[in-house]
Image (cartoon, rainbow, N blue to C red; front, side, top):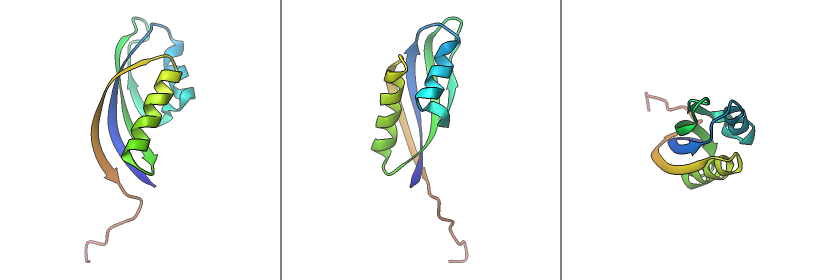
Length: 90
């Protein structure tokens, strides 16, 4: 599988439990930036392993919604990081 990099913008309610809920929902491959005391706008930066970019993004959206956040935007850098190494000598 390939690793895809992308960002998810979202809004979330206030509460310390929000970050833990996102992690448990499957966002364990993301760095989440959100003030849990105020809630509101947040961002999650993913490096997600999936068969396709669409699968990686769709699964993140589904997991976020299941955790109670509203996904507002996806910024798809879609830099694919392959598991195979490249021989610079050719």
